[in-house]
Amino acid sequence: MPSVSPDNHPRLWDFSLAYYARTGVAEACLRLQDEQGVNVNLLLWCMWLEKCGWELDAARLRAAQKHIHAWDEHYVVPLRHLRRRMKAEYGVADRGIEDVREQIKQAELLAEKQLQTRLETETQTWPRAEIQQSVPGANLRLYLQQFNLTETLMAQLLELLEGAPASMVKHDT
Image 1 (cartoon, rainbow, N blue to C red):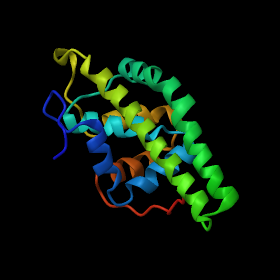
Image 2 (cartoon, rainbow, N blue to C red; image 1 turned 180 degrees about the vertical axis):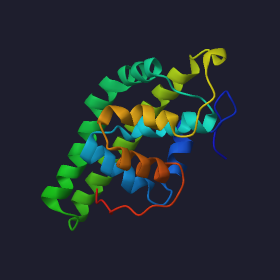
Image 3 (cartoon, rainbow, N blue to C red; image 1 turned 90 degrees about the vertical axis):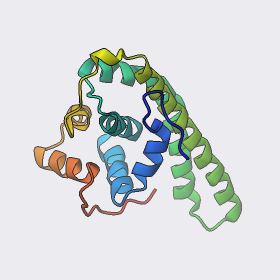
């Protein structure tokens, strides 16, 4: 049974694992990460906030980005780059190297879980009386606006990430 946050919603990490496993979501997230520089953990946090019914504002988004920036830059991203570089340089045929790469992947996931814990902790400091009810797609739109995506791409992403099926090009990690 997933753990529950103080407001009786699934914890961010539990939500993220389930949401990321949905058809097309991982591929879309990885494309946004690799092609646009989107932080997938922030994207999932925006989705989680919406599912909790909380509307994100620009000030809280900036505060959250600042809160996780150093951890992401110094730990999550370097582990991801190391894991991907190993795959590019050595392929997947050598079992010993694959074992090392799998350990790096597990460390990367733990680092991402810690980042999400920081985001959830940040959220728990918000006075509940000040939190507005979320409009569907508003949190995601607020976050993604900073990446100068076309309106067409934004609409496609919102459709996919809000739950409607969409076909996305597979992306190998």
